[in-house]
Amino acid sequence: MTTTSSAPPSETVASGDEALVELLRLSGRGYTVVRHVLNQLPSGPADRTSVLGPMVTERKRRPLQLYLLLLTVWPWLQNQQPLPNIVWARALTTDTGRIWTATNVSEAWNDLEERGLITRERKSRAVLITPRREDGKAPYTPPGAIKKNHRETFFILPGTFWRDGWFEKLSMPGLAMLLIIAGLTSDKQEAWLTNKDAGKWFGLSPRSVEAGIEDLRTKHLLEERAEWIKAPLSAIGATQRHWYHLTGEFDTDQRRALQERTRQEVRARMSASGAQKASGSTIKIKKKGAATGATADRKVKRRRKSAEES
DNA sequence: CACTTCGGCCGCTTTGGCAG
DNA sequence: CTGCCAAAGCGGCCGAAGTG
Image (cartoon, rainbow, N blue to C red; front, side, top):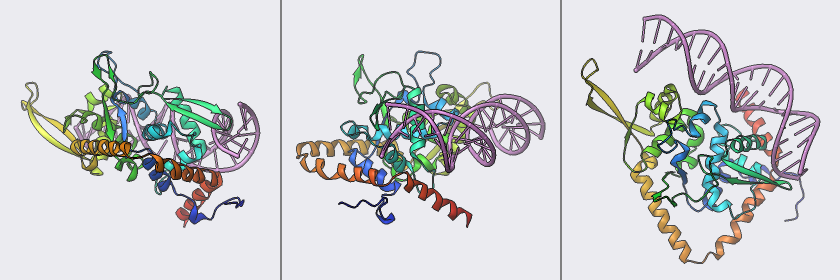
């Protein structure tokens, strides 16, 4: 282990997928827990738009992805050394999606900081990132705590969101509607909405709501059921109400089952010894982070560019 | 050394407006 | 409601220079 060459042979450099999978594994549960307040503020104020809507309108895709990943790995990361930006970049870089560099990560942290979604603190060379609550209005706490007689509500994004690259394959409106509908169906099978109302509730344009739903539908993540209801003022005296639900791992029951399975696994792990866990894995990911500099990312970019040209 | 900021140009998404 | 157009403004991209 005393090699001092500048770059490791390419076949030993971890790809984005591997970095992401490793992060998910280390984080201990394969899914992401998100409070509803990301999508929408609690009832009360007239304008309930929270952070998600504006992020869509302002096309802040990278910051949104990065924040969701931070929430995902935080249970593990909070007890670790800070992760280098280049590692975040590699985890979020997929084979067919956009390419992340340390610069992108830095700029995304910047945006998140302005939204109150993280704090960052420079620790000599590294930056220490700490998430804040999903509405940007308070420090982060583990979701689900009981506050003022009611439990903080949250929903989950199953592992497929990361593993199968949905965070990158979906359009920005698609991503937003996935979060919104996942939130609406966290405690029931389906939810209905209209483009116009949903736009108002979540701070999106009706066009984006529609585009998002369409994106989810064509990618088979969403199914729709039409129900006829009375509408005295419509031409035919009735109108359709559209009920939506997510499919596959995103389905309400499957998400519930996933949570339950994880709860049991965590319990089992707690009762077993935590000794083996501490040794191997953390070292591995640090090596990946340190060994491949920005040059490796540039190489990927160039490789891809020349592939496109030919 | 790792991270951050900057500048310039291009392309694209989102949105509003309008028509059918 | 759907389709289309145009405009605004943002992100992508890249290298280079600045900072702790």
